[in-house]
Length: 124
Image (cartoon, rainbow, N blue to C red; front, side):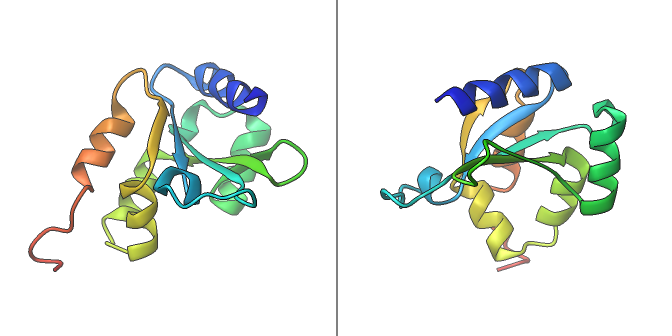
């Protein structure tokens, strides 16, 4: 729980429209004693400090863990996430469609989940 509170504090520090989602097996209801805590932080890469922006530009994410890889989050730019989801890749869609919102002060994550909650007919 402490790491989740840190992730929420980090999201708040990145700005009012940064959201935090629980993703992966725990969010989908498949977690067990071996499951790690996977989170996505979605916001604007423009608000990242210089060192984090450099990491994002090099790797496509900012990865933060609590030191044991059992709880972590990855920061993604909202535009990059939307672009990836618009490719209708099953893995990315599954992560979004089974995610749970932890923190979403401006509703951006909620809007994203609604937009990608089902495959459009032309993709099916």
